[in-house]
Image 1 (cartoon, rainbow, N blue to C red):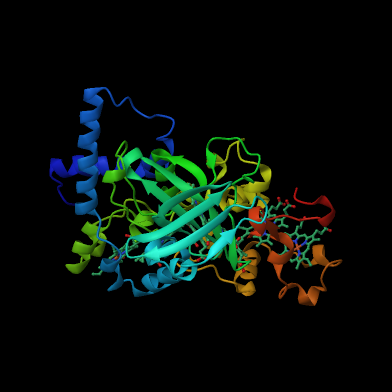
Image 2: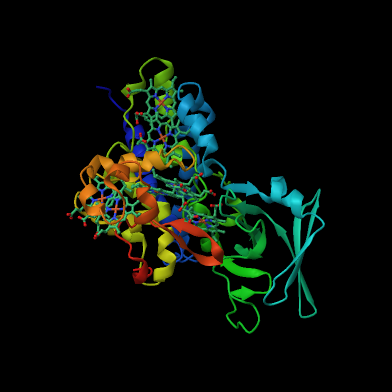
Length: 388
Ligand code: HEC
Ligand code: HEC
Ligand code: HEC
Ligand code: HEC
Ligand code: HEC
Ligand code: HEC
Ligand code: HEC
């Protein structure tokens, strides 16, 4: 048993609070923008901000510190999209590919030309005789499916999601999924260069592609971004664990989050991949196939015993998605070893044990822009029924 000095208890409880709300905090900033004119609010906010910065500096160790003892998880993480989902635009492969080229939106005729220079990467949009030029700051997405460009304007505390996106399945640029045809669109949020974002929108967007973002109310100009979803985004701060482990006492420091608990794990994944709590009526049915926790939660496999089925039943949380059919079938057969009879009409019973369960029960579905997702709502999908 160790005795913790009280200042540390305070810092830890603040830290827990911050981590617990990390996911929702970033998201809720839009609704609860505090009154900036109120001096006491501003003071308490600025003290929160410096506490947040100091916690990051003192409690987090960074991925490099883990590798020496957890080489397997570290190598797997390097392969996963989690470790390569946010890039400085000018450092990206895409910036080099696009330099000197241009793109024309096939439907509304907007043309964008690209230039990489020592001052950064620039996108110039030409539309109806007007030209708008922006420096592109960030590229989100590993390109497993897509990569979308974002600009940040610190002077106005605003941002822009560009209208063009790299679409991997087409191996070319296309319209950013979710953005409308610009011709005839009158929503002021959609301008010819893309979708305008407030500072809160930028933080929300980055909150799922980065390890941690700013403290509440921190203006974009002052934010130090920590790109990608690193070990401590999922495991919580680990500096104390690293120090103790180097003294041979790794288990002297208990983890802040126990990811061995399936429900804790699911709640973590749902922060970004979105579960039932994160999906509301404003999200169209056709968009929901992207949200694996939400879809899985619709399955009878899950509902029957929520503690028995979680993401790591089928996935290694550290690694890239496996395409090994056997891996997934083995997961099904843990609970469904005696279903041959049901499949008489579908599959000869001798072939049941080697069949591709996922192809029939978790078929791929189209999402926006032609991107496909495996439907995590495990069920008997009757073709004639369509989606539902
Ligand atoms: C000097 C070696 C060492 C370093 C460095 C280290 N660990 Fe560990 N870690 C261990 C050992 C040993 C265990 C097993 C302890 C136990 O049995 O609980 C462990 C267990 C864990 C566990 C599983 C049990 C738990 O506490 O949740 C996680 C997760 C973990 N480490 C994450 C990390 C992360 C993240 C980092 C980098 C920030 C890191 N470790 C750095 C040695 C290390
Ligand atoms: C902080 C947000 C966040 C959290 C938490 C999170 N993910 Fe992700 N996950 C992402 C993003 C963003 C991507 C897309 C990465 C890319 O390819 O650009 C992704 C991609 C993935 C992929 C595809 C990886 C690949 O390379 O094929 C899997 C599988 C996955 N996540 C599973 C999980 C599981 C399981 C959990 C919970 C243990 C989890 N994620 C937690 C944001 C998150
Ligand atoms: C609530 C969390 C969340 C927010 C907010 C969010 N994303 Fe994502 N994003 C994800 C997850 C999870 C994935 C991986 C699964 C998928 O592709 O849907 C992903 C995938 C992506 C991909 C495709 C990566 C790939 O190659 O597979 C791009 C591009 C992307 N997001 C861009 C953005 C942009 C730009 C914004 C803000 C304007 C944004 N995202 C906001 C969670 C989020
Ligand atoms: C997307 C979330 C996520 C990220 C990022 C992540 N982990 Fe994990 N990790 C988990 C989950 C969930 C578990 C528990 C379930 C499991 O074992 O797969 C886990 C388990 C572990 C364990 C215990 C393994 C065991 O067999 O007991 C260690 C050690 C670990 N992680 C280290 C790391 C290190 C080091 C990194 C960074 C290189 C990292 N993790 C990044 C989600 C994550
Ligand atoms: C943790 C245990 C578990 C795992 C793993 C699991 N299931 Fe299930 N599944 C169940 C239970 C329990 C039911 C409900 C049975 C009932 O209600 O009679 C069910 C129901 C089903 C149903 C009928 C659902 C419906 O709505 O008609 C199908 C189809 C199914 N599972 C297929 C699969 C496939 C395919 C996999 C692997 C991709 C899988 N299951 C993985 C436990 C599991
Ligand atoms: C019953 C098995 C099963 C479970 C449980 C499961 N997945 Fe998957 N997941 C799959 C299969 C199968 C694929 C597609 C593999 C392939 O591409 O070959 C997949 C693919 C993905 C992808 C890549 C996007 C895509 O559609 O190709 C992400 C992200 C993902 N899963 C996240 C999650 C998260 C988060 C959870 C927990 C809520 C979860 N999965 C639970 C079987 C599962
Ligand atoms: C060729 C497509 C196909 C494959 C492959 C397949 N299934 Fe099925 N499965 C079906 C169909 C169709 C039904 C519905 C049969 C019916 O209702 O008569 C079904 C029904 C089920 C049910 C529901 C039984 C019930 O009680 O209603 C389960 C569980 C199931 N399958 C599990 C699996 C597992 C596990 C695998 C892999 C080992 C698998 N299936 C492979 C098509 C398939």
